Length: 423
Image (cartoon, rainbow, N blue to C red; front, side, top):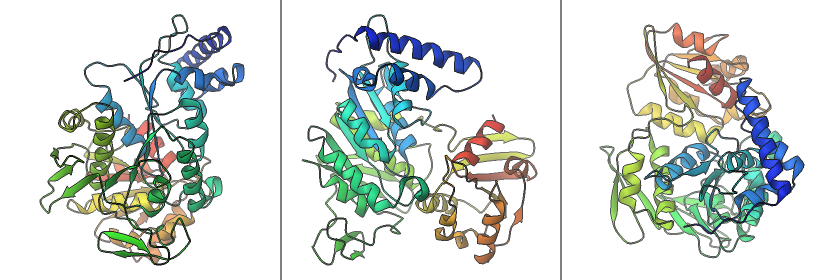
């Protein structure tokens, strides 16, 4: 599955040694150290990312939503049977974080890396990271509006990803056929492999990525009314029946049952990508599905915390498309209280206008609490949705004040603040 690694030159070995020392000191000081090591190593050797990736079988996962979960699933599929594997499980998905994850599994003495690396990559950095790591597989999950003040308009992001894909003709690209922008980027690959399942979100799928013509949706299909670009047929297809049974149909016609502990359609779709990548790298779908069965949480996502008087389930939603997935999940069970926590720090994006694109009207059955640093903005949006709610200064305290089962849905920093507080 991997090539024999080249021995690091002296300068790179010194960079790795110092970076690991600095990262260890950061963790000792109570910081998670997911970025600092890579930053130090890159300052000492600008080509250190490429040197650390050399000889590895690299899988890169990008997209707006689901990167961390899908990366963890692929790592679990490929890392079975005790195989050592490098992955940025803490979600640090820019070049410094990816470099840190690689050097953490690299010996500066014998230059022996783990043979497989599965890395999630921020969409804006896919081109840079792919050029340095020579990936065997690139996974394109979906593209939707997110942090417009940082990354810009989503069609621009998708075009940049398409450029990165086209620049890696040797990589196998696994892309989501039902997302119009994702399919546009995937079609620039030499031989894309398509994952398919009817998407719950079409809010960013109105314009053709090739000719800017209008895209029409008919049933489970989409097509451009101008140039004729249409949804590719799926090689790997997720089929879900009314009873909640999920089956994956692969390119060879075989069907594999999914029995996940992670809830919701979005996670079942993420698992299809994991099965597809596993098959590309020698893991059968049946074995891959079995390895995913025991996965209960990813970086605190979907974790249920027991507290006096009840439980709190932690969910992440940071943009309208992500909220569409969470709303589907909340609809799967009886209504229970929901705390909506939104911040607007640098990691979240300062702009919270996306709240107006979330159909919060669907939460009318749930007792609601607006919380987080932008609780007032959330409250205004809920008021216009006609949904009763109350406000709270502290999202975690709001869950503790509620008897029984509660869902806390936070955007990026609100989610991680809650996860730390409930640990």
